[in-house]
View 1 (cartoon, helix red, strand yellow):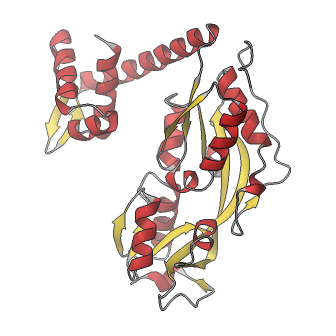
View 2: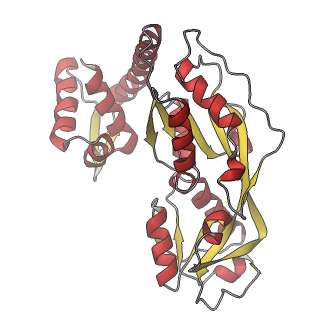
View 3: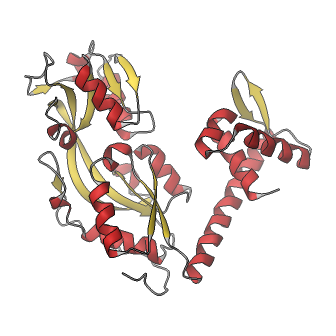
Length: 319
């Protein structure tokens, strides 16, 4: 049994599909299949059974999943600790949703690299929901996400920016002249939504459910470029941060009634030692002047000082 086999097994169990697991892991499908088969031969048990196109855990597989997840978490923590002892922590894994990363992260990245040239950043782009789960599972070190109240029990939360979701339409849309719009008025409008792992996509669907309306969703995507292109060129609508729409002359943002306020925040896991490089990043982001980089649709949160970081002591990374 090897750790890499466990990682492949865990991913297959999560997505219930070998092909999708291989894509998520950026490896060839036969490698994932071989890893599962090797584990099953080694232990003389079936870890999965097939149901249509899905891979479902057996009773033995369920037990193995729980123990394998614990073992991988311990192995990752051990690796990080030993690298920290040796002064080798030079890569920080950061989770950031595509919509946030598209306009916040580039200037922040340049400024951080200027102050900490010896630290590399490994960016994982997923929706806020999946990003928070990855942080909980120690797959990343820190994240910048939509920080709703549900996160506060599991993570330290440092609010950074405030904005709101607006309905984005083409500047030539018949709706472009509206100042505000209700969910009821969007029943027939073809919509482009973020994927289900995003806070925005889930929040919009919940609004439609409360109104008793089935939304006309024609496309889901995690790519901001794709969403903006379809919104500009088609008779569709999408839901974007006001800041993104204000910066694009080919789109118009219509306020939702009632509004959907958004707080963007930096989060990191509670009750976990934060090593020096990650602590440096948290401190840097907490001090960073976002006012220089945000537009008219977004405001900087005032007076929200950073939570105290529980930091593993070692010589601070050279600036």
